[in-house]
Amino acid sequence: MIPLLLIIVPLIGGIISFLLKEDKAAKSWSLLIALITLAISFSGIYFFNNTDALTLQLPWMPALGTSFDLQMDGMSSMLTLLTAIGFSVIFVAVYRNAYVKPGNFFAGMLLTQAGLMGVFVAADALVFYFFWELALIPAYFLASNWGGEKRIAATFKFFVYTFVGSLLMLIGIFYLYFQTPGNHLFAIEAFYQLHLSIHQQYVFFWLFFIAFAIKMPLFPLHTWQPDAYEQATTGVTMVLSAIMVKMGVYATIRWLVPVFPVATTHFANFIIILSVIGMLYASLIAIRQDDFKRVIAYSSIAHIGLMCAAIFAQKEAGWNGVMVQMFNHGIVVLGLWIVADVIEQQLGTRKLSALGGLAQKAPELAILFVVMALANVALPLTNSFIGEFLMFNGLFQYNVVMAIFALIAIILTAVYTLNTVQKIFYGEVVLTTTNAVDAGLNVRLILWILVVVIFFFGIYPEPMIHLTHDTVKALLVK
Image 1 (cartoon, rainbow, N blue to C red):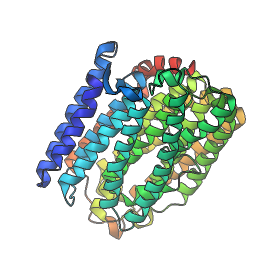
Image 2: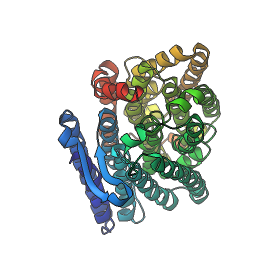
Image 3: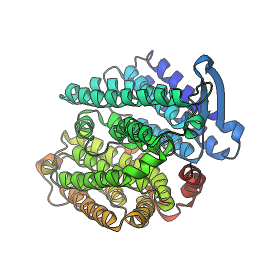
């Protein structure tokens, strides 16, 4: 019942939000729905050992061999929790922002949340595909209707990439469906038990992987991301960056590696090389950026590249690190985007060259951002450290040379992150920041909560590792 509630509550909340015309009513309603969903998500953690509470199977289209099958294991529980936390944080952080047609905006956000929840709990390939599209469609309209002047072009690129990827995945799903014995099934366990030839694995591995790599995004399929992040309004960007990219990482672990084990091993070296190239490329590009949003966008590409490399290294330590880092990256990047939004809303610019000395005008915001920045470079005692340590452990076990090049990218991450801190918050106060003040109470409150989470999981990561450890063991032996 819990996985169904995680979908139904934001879905119904989003539909009702379309009827709300007043700004405050739309924001308050959406925040209420997000908090209810968060409470349900926490209950899923509480009932983690109760199979009946975390599974649901209802008739859907039995003639096609598909059922509305929802299941939550440790990875699903972790990602639904991240999704619930993420939307609650976003709605609090943007509460004072003004939106044209706020009811429609927050309806789109809640429908996106429903789609994301469905992706993370679906145990049937057709249900998975249905929610994959449900998450993307409202995100497309959110990005195209609210954002910068070039949002239409950026959103069109986003649509083309994701549409092509989704089409390839759908072809792959139906092919695998027809390979299941007897009465054909879309159930994930039926896909796991397939005995595909080497040629079949090689071909259909790529149909799925391209779809998932676009969503991460992985170099060289990443080019839609910086433009979309830059042009979308920050609330939408936070969803795309903190949560939606995890769809690709999750799907690779859940739907790709166990179904195509031979192809995964065969292409692992090539994909790890691509991932490390992407890390180095994104980090070098980030150093040259003058737009705060684009710095965060390229930083996200680098971090996801490390996760992808650790997945294909296929080591238990690396996979444990990926599980932890999916959650922790979401928390850190939410904080970075919130600060970017505060600066843009208050000062009307995101250009690093136009900023400076903001710590003198907004000291509390400066302290909070420095913590986020240190977490972004995986400083010990911050939540990102243990995840990156475990991922590098797995990568070193696989290939020392690749791990060393990946470490260079981490050093570059420190360069552009600390450079961003210096340019925005330190030095002399410039004309742009003369009248700056500290962030509003709602923003400071949510940033302090994120800081507590960062230090809690940095000092004591065991709860997250324990939650997902059994899932790692189960999927690695598929």
